[in-house]
Length: 333
Image 1 (cartoon, rainbow, N blue to C red):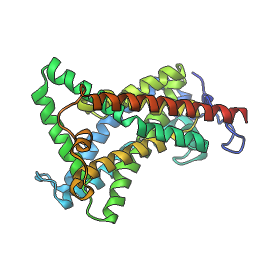
Image 2: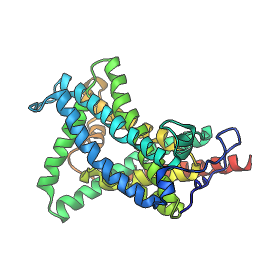
Image 3: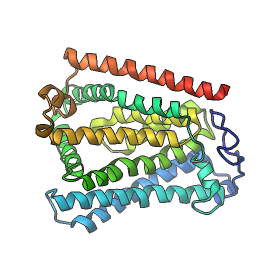
Image 4: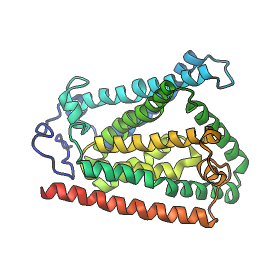
């Protein structure tokens, strides 16, 4: 097994990061397969996160709470944020130490996760804007998936119940009554998952996959696992597409900072959309807009839905091309 980190696809300037480091941790000394270690870590952290998150929720909310009140929604937010930090991000850094042989937040660990390299501003702008432009396309794909699950597979009743529970949870988590609460929601619901999940998936898992397979295969596999990891059958395919896009950003740029920021932008605008629906009367939103933002019934046949999907796909591709050009421009410089 190779003991040197794989080179990023994007060259870095000499001032952006330290020289390559030799890994001397336990996993490297024992010559464990990097993909096998990554998959084993995913299975372990999945159960740790689920169990630990459930315990924290019970401690914060109580074992008998059935309604999402103002206090319980805040408590659930805090338990979710702490779960991400202590059961995803922190264990990821511990795993990295078992590769590098260095202490938890050492230079070697940050280098392993590609947290030193800074993306060019144009690449950051186009990649983040692309993930916003992608939203109508992902929404349409999600609607197609729902139609298949409801009408082809005959799962309408079970999927409907699951969707209602998921929507109720999201509405409770994104309920905002003050500027302070808005900041809290953005930090816990948008920022913390973006940082913690990217450290695990694009930082650790994709890194280890890419040490034993092609960059493309590692990106696709990481994206598929990312979608499955969220245990959300209603949005499985959109989550997989989103995961593959974030993995593409990681492999093409050579830095974890770029997918982290793009992930945050996606979460942030999702939060804004949910807030807009919740405060539709104050904002004076049109019913057609509301149906696109937050409808229980999928819409895949109306001209408006099809046009929005096509425009979204076209704009996303244009922004990805702009992103690729910005990387080539940096290479030429």
